[in-house]
Length: 215
Image 1 (cartoon, rainbow, N blue to C red):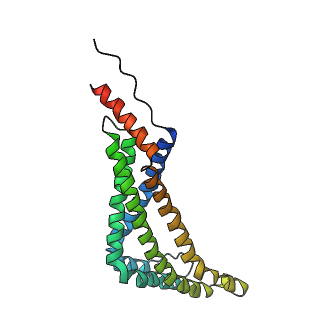
Image 2 (spheres, rainbow, N blue to C red; image 1 turned 45 degrees about the horizontal axis):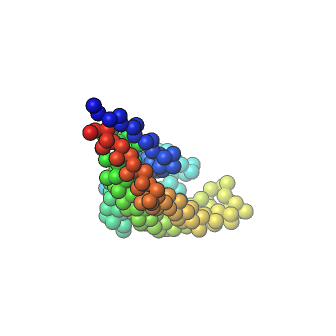
Image 3 (cartoon, rainbow, N blue to C red; image 1 turned 135 degrees about the horizontal axis):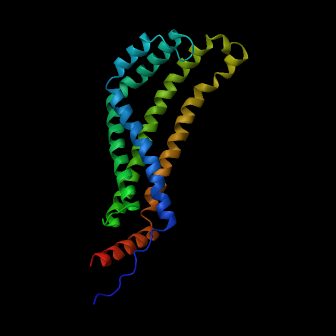
């Protein structure tokens, strides 16, 4: 006669919420990194397409061409290194996404292995996203003066509006760095959380209950 097995304890609400946040942050971060990494291989083609396009973002194709050229000049020197960082970032985000999904729906797999993968990959994402953000801040810093000078030629930015436009020179890099700090900081918090003793105890309890059910 087999002894009754108690049902597996459910994951704590905080742990489930952290896994969901991991999914929500890793998916767009990894997708955008992969898209930009692939796009860097066609940087010159993209510049030519934008230059010959009849459509204009700001209403003047010549201004669009200057902005596109400024972006190209800023990205070209770091194209290879940035593509490498973005490619690694997309892979690390994939590990975060898969491990977080498995923690929510283990399907009999040991959660401890997924916890370690999620914790380690989240910290790797934080480092790579910081490098990515630093690179993009350099791009934004180089593009901002060109954008401001180009926008000054538009009628809507003459006079007082033209002076206010100077704020963009420091605002663009500042926004880039702030967003990087937010995203990278979130992954640091997630990585540290999944290394905490409370999460380890909850995972061990869940794995122990699953092992008893299999027996």
